Length: 280
Image (cartoon, rainbow, N blue to C red; front, side, top):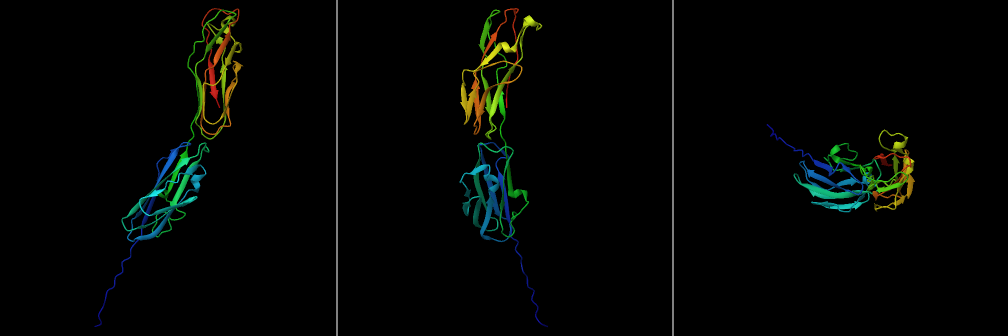
């Protein structure tokens, strides 16, 4: 009989596992986001001159690349908006790529940084057009609040009917941490000053009191700050401090002086009013 020979062929399966992560899920204007890309030969074949690319176009509209990319092996190149890694891997080998971006300040509100790493290599888990979530890093930009603080209580002093009582309200601060360059205006309003049952002789109308600012105690951030030297208090909000030409986070503090004209017919007692600050 003719001799028989059994021939065998072993098929080696390539596997290039790629993952990308960001160190934070949310970031604030001016902060840094660190990215890490892991590339591992998890298959049975070696890779020679394999490339992995990271498209930063979804990041650069709201952040700046810091030019600090590094890899544990292989070489890196950057031609905006693409970061490219090229290297060799044998089965079981891996490399780690890191780089960072700095979020713009001011930044666009309600936006995200998103970018996807891909490779055209056989067996890559992040091919072009991939929907694999492990290939994409998403970081939301969170802008801070716009707030105003003022003392909870203040003693303005005492005086006789027909006189004027003057005192400091204490420190008021408006702080804008939104970071996207919007202007703001701080306002003040007040109820009437009343004592006892609030009868006519037990009431000092809010309009008989003034709110004066001699200047800002402090101001931070790139903006043009404007103060209104004096306003008569009212139940309607009156503008007292504003910021325009804003380019980032800002804050301002001031110590308003309150002057209250006491009517000639006012009865004795401690008169109280609620002075409300707001900012928008």
